[in-house]
Image 1 (cartoon, rainbow, N blue to C red):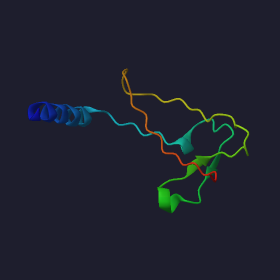
Image 2: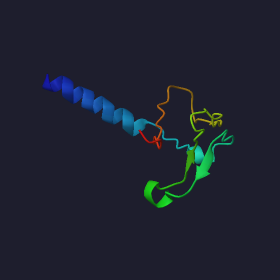
Image 3: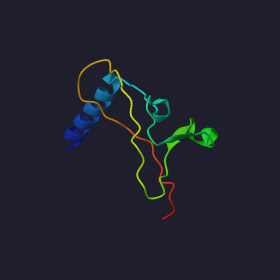
Image 4: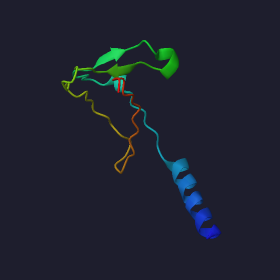
Length: 86
C-alpha cells in the first residue's frame, strides 16, 4: 500500500513539473459582456476583477479567445467570489 501511495505521489509531482502554465485573467478578456472592471480590491486580490450584478437578471457572458501552446487537455482554474448577500 505504501508503494502505491508513493507511486501516485511521484506521478502527480512529475506531471506537475512538466505541465505548461498559461495565465488568462478575466479582466483582460476582449469582450467583457455585461461585466464591469472593478479595481477597488487590487491590493487585496493582486489584480482587478470582473464584476456583474444584474440584480437577479443574468448579464451577457464575458468571452475571449486563448491561443494555447499545444493541443491537449487543459485544466482551468477560476477565482471567483459570490458578492451577493445570503
